[in-house]
Amino acid sequence: MSTVAKLLARNERLLAQLESDPGPNEREEIERLLAQIETALSLLAPEDGAGPSDA
Image (cartoon, rainbow, N blue to C red; front, side, top):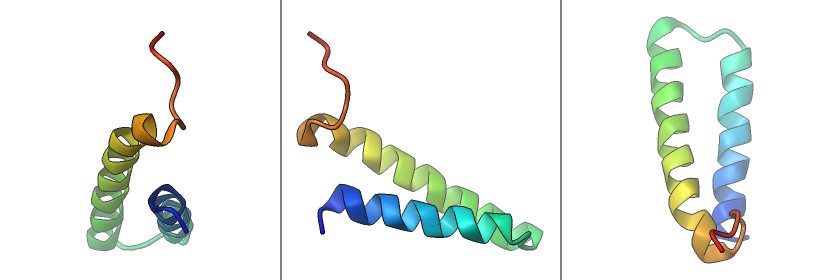
């Protein structure tokens, strides 16, 4: 499984956790992890050709 695929799978699991109405501390941690995943995906996407071209 590629790094991008792993990040996307983790992202989906965290989103499912958010939907289960976690407590405020857990929600904060989940949102922090989601932000890290989004950053990682934005850095990886251009290398993997998954992002839009700047041509």
